Length: 297
Image (cartoon, rainbow, N blue to C red; front, side, top):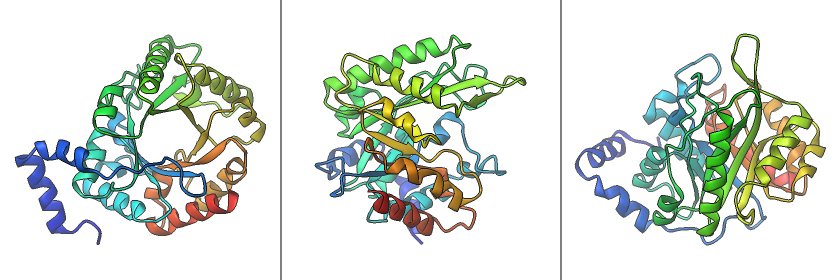
């Protein structure tokens, strides 16, 4: 067991009695000197879903609400030697720091989580997490922002503007700006759905690539496209996102394979698909993804 009762109780005790321990943990963390692995790849586990209220996995609408269970799964995933690090909101990153799980790991802080899942204003995704100043002060490796593009929703405009400012702020501090551009539209019921159309995804990539005063530190996080030529739209480094699990791990892995072989793709950023596999075996799911990345590169 990675998160024993004793270790869990110590985390809770520290949270309640020693808030300054968080800043000490940021300062003391052994920071990795390079983003990419020795194979020039990057494999991150995503754990920022709860901060925007996206707790569901399959039919279980609150799977990610159990924090001890989530942390246990993250500890298992981060123990894999080919997992380079984590992408998380401040609370999750700090819990992992206090648990000593982020030494010599890449840590990307999640910046905008205000577009709560299912909310009427979901597209207007305000920055409610890390900012560039905090990411630099806490010695993290970059910041991630979600950019959902819906031409029929004016909430896209403030999100687009805020992302452009964040890209510039991160670049001025020589920190990675990981932008996740996703084309969206509303179905007849008014529910937001992501477009899988190749032209829409290519357009989203080009919009994200042009954000800010420089693209020197910009990376893109995009879903694996069925039409791999979509990736020809950029020279920026790309990581493939895992997305919501389909319930068929083999199919999920297969869907990433083609994209991972494209020249601009450097790796994977996957959350629920690996943390909550149908059989519960997190270590095996992470190992299968690591093997796929290794073979593709």
